Image: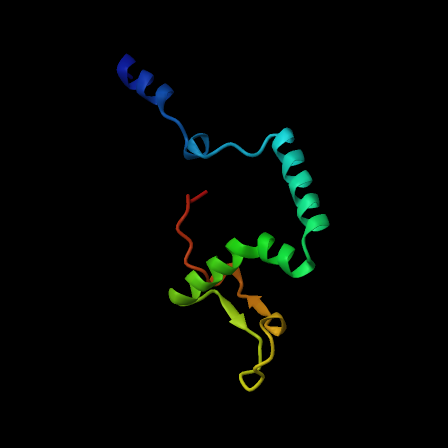
Length: 101
């Protein structure tokens, strides 16, 4: 094997090395403190909106693309949004486009 090929192989990086690093302990502690602050200063509804904002946005986006969850709310029942429950389908049914490992 040529030296250049060996050097090329050594310089290759797996996709896992290019992924963002996980949170450090100080970042986790900061997130816990922020979550406690929200829980102490907001109502339960406001706190749930804050903590699940991206989840709700993701659910709306996935519904536009065909959805990955099943709405368990009765169609006849027009009660508050809080009564609506979602059940996620098995991840095996999802279209997953990630690394093959």
